[in-house]
Amino acid sequence: MSASQNSNNNTRVTLNERLEPYLAIIGPLVMIALIALAMGIFEPARYFRLSNLNIILLESALYMPMAMAMTFVITQRGIDLSIGSVAALSAIIVAFLIKQYGFPAWIALIIGVALGAGMGFINGLVITRFRVPDLIGTLAMDLVYRGFALVLAKGLVLARFPELVTEIGRGQAFYILPTPVVIGVLSLIAGYFVLTRTYFGRYTIAIGSNPEAAEMTGISVDRHRVYAYVLMGAMAGLAGVMLMGKLNAIQATSAPYFNLHVIAAVVVGGTSLFGGRASMLGSFAGVLLLSMMINALVTLRIEFFWQSVASGVVIITSVAVYTWLQKSDRDGATGLMSAFANPDNVKTLKLAALLIGILAILFISGGLLSGNPNPSG
Image (cartoon, rainbow, N blue to C red; front, side, top):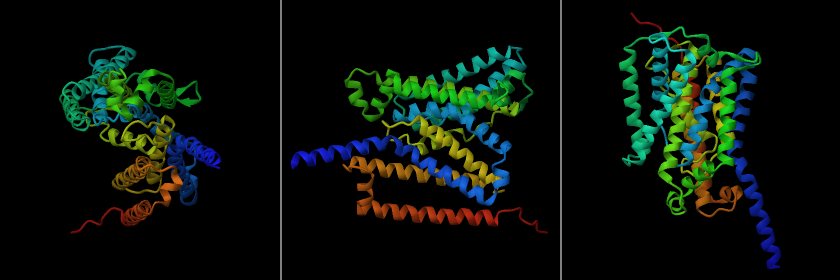
């Protein structure tokens, strides 16, 4: 009898383990389906027309390379708040190389991505050599890089670049798919391969799970953390070039919210802020979800400021849910159903539902009351 019970327990654990990799992707997919359903009710003609779907894809593609790299950074228990400034500074330097110094566009683009990698390398050294916490170190470097961009640009808007630059930002590959989408999807595929098929990916998960244990097994934790930040900087530089090509212009204040958007997409996709758990497919779904949400708000003619509110609600909700799930794991739960059966967890869910309901009411009220105020006097 005990043998059969053990067999049933093993079967139950195996089923939970099989479901575990898909839990990260279920959340964003459900939210994507809800957005599609809501827009199918309120604005089907405008939201689902081909031109608007193309806009969503182009917006998503801009964040895909950064989401791929941020997945590695966050999986190693890191964070990078400087990617917006890295993107802006890289693009500003590329613009100056092309317009002022006459560099061929392809050489300037390579230099821009390399400069982004260099800035990521500096971030990694600040964190690993000077032992500055990731949050403080990258936030400080964000100010440094943004300051350099402001000094270089001197308030100018640099515009009208060669065709190669605009092709990267909004061109068509083989007259079928938008070039940025091809770049973004290929970067995520490459990231998935590195994460699941290489030593760097395995070391990344090991470092995030337990840095001390990883160090004791012979993994150079600091070196691999620097590698992750170098990759993050290079992808931020690439995103800066893509943004420059998309707009056919760049200025020092560009890309102010890249960091929050990318971090939100990665966390919504199921990569753990506590490290050791990553989902490249989830990061793709997270990027697509946020782009669909923002586009839906624009389609519904809701003001830009309420878009920020909606993004914040998504971040809070996703982080809270995944933190709750991870707490269940740490407390010894044997699956998702046992987590729901815990009375304390049920109370937490009810509180979270109440908070989300209040935020939703505020959001809807703001959307209904938004509009241009009547001037007085």
